[in-house]
Each structure stands twice: as C-alpha cells, then as structure tokens.
Image (cartoon, rainbow, N blue to C red; front, side):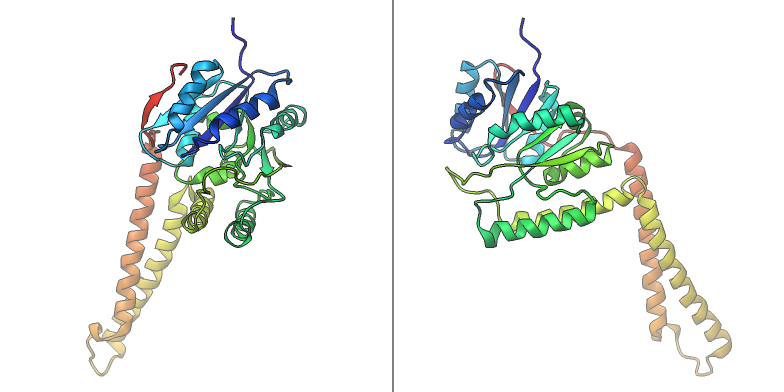
Amino acid sequence: MQKPVTVSLVVPLLNEEESISELYEWITRALKDEPFTHEVLFIDDGSTDHSWEVIQSISEKHTNVKGIRFAKNFGKSQALHAGFEEVTGDFVVTLDADLQDSPEEIPQMIRSLQEEGLDLISGWKKKRYDSILFKNLPSKLFNWAARKVSGIRLHDFNCGIKAYRREVVKTIDVYGEMHRYIPVLAAQHGFQKISEQVVQHQARKFGQTKFGADRFFKGFLDLITLWFLTKFGKRPMHFFGLWGTFMLLVGFTFTLYLGIDKLYLDTQARLITNRPEFYIALTLMLLGSQFFIAGFLGELILRTKENSKRYAIQERTSRL
C-alpha cells in the first residue's frame, strides 16, 4: 500500500525542456534522506518546445511524478491554481523550473511550518544573480510598494519558492497575475502566520528569463487591484456609493444654485446652458448616477459569483 504524500511540489513551467530532468534529479537528491514522502506535479503552461515530452518520460519512470499540460499559455497564476487543485500532500511547495530556486531549501521550510506553526513561508532571494537595472531595482521598488499596501513584512513577494500548509492552497483562488500576491491572498482568508526564509538564488543556466517591462507594470496594476479588493472587495457599494453620493450632492447643489439665481437674482436673463455651472452640475450628476449603478452591479455580481476555471487542460500524464 502506497504511503500518503506528505509534501507536494508544484512546478509551473514554460519552455524549460533543458532544465526539467536536472531539476527533478536535484529534487530527488535534496529530499532522499528526509523522513517525509513527496510528489512532484509539473504544470506545462502551453510550452512550444519539448517540455511535455520530457515530463511524460519522467512520469513513466517515477510513480511520484505527475503532469498537467495546458492547451495554451494561460499564465503562471492559472498554472499554480491547477496544481493546487490536484495536490494531496499535507504541505505544498512551489518552485520555478529554471533551476534558480534550490530544492535544498525545502526541508528547512517544511520544518519551520511544522515547528513554528506557520501557515506560509516565503523565500527571500537576498542575493540575486539578475540584472540590477532591469530586474533587481524594479523588484525592490515593487516589493516596497507591496509591503506598504498589504502591511505584510516580506522582502520578496515574487520569490518562486514558497511553502504552505495544504489548507492555504485549497482555500485561496489564484487568478489573473495574482501569483505575486499569494501571501496577501492568504492573509485575506485568515492565514496570518506568514514568515520568510533567506534562500540561495542561482544564476539562470538555460533559456531566457520570462521577466519583461510589461510584467513590471502589470504587477503594479495588480497591486492597485489588490488594494481595492482588500478594502472594498466585500462591499463595493461602500466605495462607489460614497463617491456617487458626493458627486450627486455637489451636482444638486450647483443645480439648486442655478435655479435660485435664475428665478430671483439673474437680472440679465442669461440662458442656463451658457453658464459653466450648468455643465459642472450635469457632469457630476451623471457621474454620480453611474457610480451608484456600478456599486449596485458590483454587489449583484458579488452575490451571484460562481467559481469557474480560467484555463483549459489539454492532456495529463497517466498518473493523474
């Protein structure tokens, strides 16, 4: 009878055919003397090289290896979400497939989760082997902004290697580009025991980085989205209704002023439509009404929202 899995490793990847086999061998060496059992789940996020063939080959030889292949490139968040749905271990570890995350960090992370009663432990690449101008500096700025907005004191939100209790990954919903903010999503669901561990960062051995300027800007836009959802995600009318009421009140005040002035004070008999106050009142009342409608729609969507998958799986290994 097969032993229950203690640790599930989720490895999202895109066009990493050269590094997959070496990564699996590295994982095996790092965990072979540990007292826990483990499984490795590779998520092929629509690779156009031979990554899937490599995953299938490893899965046929090793019973603890599973694989999922997306029909196209849906993104890292969707890959992690698919992996989180499939894991069976008591603890879940994520790491990238580019050999820049060291599997040798995993045993200490698992021990920290067990001994300190943590919900999540995130890696901190204190010393990085990336471009200072195009990756290190933007990363520092991004992490500073994330700490300020979320209140979570982590140095490296986007580090690929993280360890979780199973309850965390089964609760959170990773979507869009929100994989950068998994600690924030976990904290929103009540998993407040979050810590970090300094990890060794490796220089990229194969291929090219998937990081680009567009991901940097998307990260900040997602941060704004996350801030809004944190404060108003459960009560959108509190935001839209507040601003809608303010605009309607100001617009109504201008309208009242124009009416009184036209009836009692305006001796020149000017047309109301020739006065700038008329257009200010009209714009504010229209915007206020739209904000109210947005708030009502937000509340309606929130109450009727149904979970739906945001990816399409094309193929699985025989063990899934």
